Amino acid sequence: MTSPVPPKAALSREARTTLWRSLQTFTITRVVIALVLLLYLGVSFSGGGLRLDGVNTRTCLAYLAAALVFGALGTWWRRRFALQLGCQIAVDLAVISLLYLETGGMRSGLAILYLFPLAGAAILAPLTLALFASAVATLFLLAESTWQVFMQERQPPLMQAGLYGAAFFAGTLLVNRLAARLIKQEELAAQRGADLRVQQAINGIVIADVGDGILVVGDDSTVFTGNPAARRMLGLEGEVAAFRLGEAPGLEPLDQAFADWLGAPAEGAAFVTVKPYHEEAGPLRGRRDQPVHLKLRFARVDTLDVALGRSVVFMQDVSAIENQAQQLKLASMGRLTASIAHEVRNPLSAIGHATALLAEDLHGPAEVRLLKIMGDNVARVNRMVEDILQLSRKVQPNGEPLRLAAFLAELKAEFCETHDLADDIVHVGDAGDNTVRFDPLHLHEVLLNLLGNAIRYASRAPASIRIFPARDAAGRIELHVQDDGPGITPEVRAHLFEPFYTTSSKGTGLGLYLARELCLNNDAKLDYEYRFDAAMGPRRASGRFVISFSQPAREGQAA
Image (cartoon, rainbow, N blue to C red; front, side, top):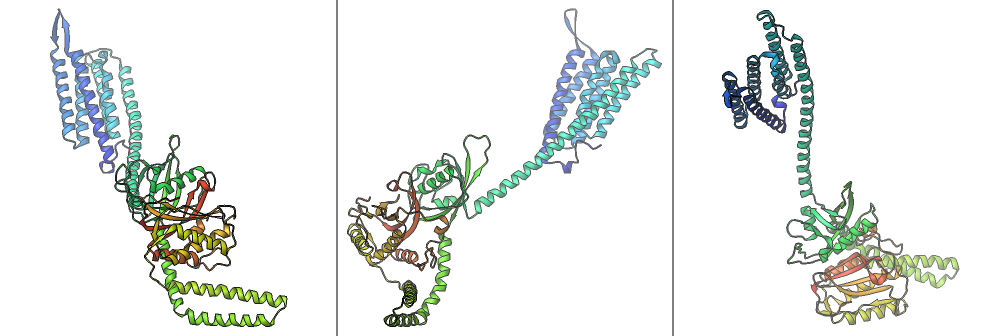
């Protein structure tokens, strides 16, 4: 059988603290027993007065004093646990035995007091020491009964002494086994607690240093905590306290994406753009100078019966990843651009000229179809060459202010005439007297590219294509281009502005990339955002291209 108390080196700090606390409880119980014995055996009332029994009184007082000394020693000098416990049990057995003899032996009924030190030994001491204490108490009772038989010629209840001894051993074994089990469970709980604290420390380090942002959000969009990366991505100042995502105008896209996921949980990622915003006061203070494009993933936390659920939002800043991918492609494209004019353009021109000459002589249906295929592909390759060459032309933009209202009206008229569209298909919002600094030729090319994409997917119903100015939370003017067609999927959105990426068999994959480069050349931003638009239908989610100008908008009306 093993001891309920493992070797000291094997005990955890929590287990050692529990043992010392149990020893103090044992000592307090001893003080109480000493006081009860003093009142019961050392004090008597006779003849209307108080009388002290000399031997019993001195024994009980000495026992009380020893209990107080043991209590003070266990409080101020927590050393030598086994030695202190052994001394206390020895004093208990000696005092109880002395009182047992003074009060008449088995007839006094004090033999039951032996259960107190024996139970303490069974709980706190090794099994060998506990059984030794039980043997001492049992042998004492048997020896006292035998003395009465042979020396005093009395007939003591020997069977009762034997039953007490058997009870002492049985109780010691039972209590020792229970104590051993409890100590093992406490050791296991202490080990699990230590492992949990270590794991929490590791999780804290990982969450604090990980590059992805992490937010813990309730079902009511209340943010409970967030790591430093999340605060950096969202432009929050200080620690993230409990606040609602909708409280900050700049975090509205994040709030809407989270609400959409709660309504229809899905495993796919969502993409949002957090615009520049400034909050000078209040519980949520944020500052941001540049938009940040975030990839969001959501995970539900199993909170069992908790009324308010919890979810974890993982945020990844894909702006840097997109820029890095584009730079890698540009590095390869730069080497291609150096020789493309002579190596591709001149042979392409010869092929196109030969195709035109053949078209003058061949008039059969099969020949015409083949010549058309050749001409279309020549035109496509030539357009790609022109787009690639345009990337190398870093033309300085015209910095003169551009009045949006007149520019958009002229652009609409040209676009509708070129594509033979009804005038009400393209709706242009009222720009008021707002002006921006953007080269007119560059803005013209960017918007024609965006409108060309829109007309491919729009229903061509009235106002199915919309161009309208708006303002962000920081007061900067934006220009939105939107159609009523299906939005771009998150998978396509992740590669939307990469060069040579296209979902159309007739596209070169350079149009949107060129549009973004022209915006950057004019100190502006071009991005694709997911938003709700009441004009497109009740609570209909739609995507739109947004041009964000760097300078604040002039005072004026923006639809």
